[in-house]
Length: 262
Image (cartoon, rainbow, N blue to C red; front, side, top):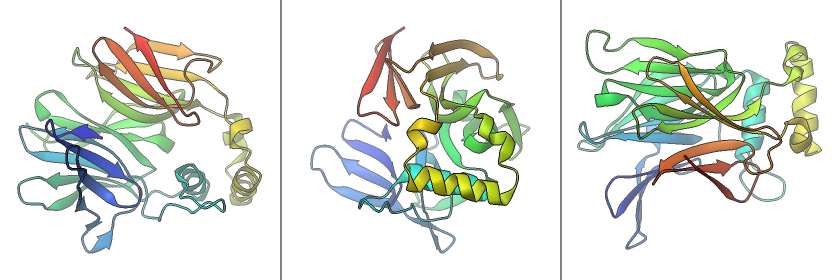
């Protein structure tokens, strides 16, 4: 989510789509829940270009978020199914605040995730979680419309990202690479692992507990690594926000927010 102004919060809701929440009246308004006549599912993350009056956001996959037998919609379950199926239907989208129009900027992404605007709105960055990389879509200048790779071959699964106060970017690595990847090439192996992880609730045992946030430059250079190797204070970090000299981190498999003084 991001604040549009002091009263309006723009939120990605994995079921409802891109929504606007008035924090004073508590009124909720759906901004975008479809594109090109088809529903938007698994809306994930966003950033706002205030100058251009546009919201850039991701839809991780075209499949509806999976329903957990315990009675809730389970984004982790959906992610595992998406990964094991090799689903590459993620998209980066743009919502025009003035016209209310939504358009697709990038498609065929392997689980589109975090979003961050570049300096001056020259480009927008999008995390491709299962590609272990961050892509850059140029919005202005001689490269307008082109897509290139800001950084790839990351040592973990990238998730949320945000702008740092010094013009760089914070990127979460929610979990390290798993040796299971080596045996997941056969389709049958992927199905067996997905079934076991979901039905037996093995995710917590399969995924190593750690906390990891990178700071990267606009050229893709890694400037800093913040690491909790045992996941004691921060674990499965999926969202990161810098504010007031502190870094606030959301823990995907926890019920708390971690804070780190910079």
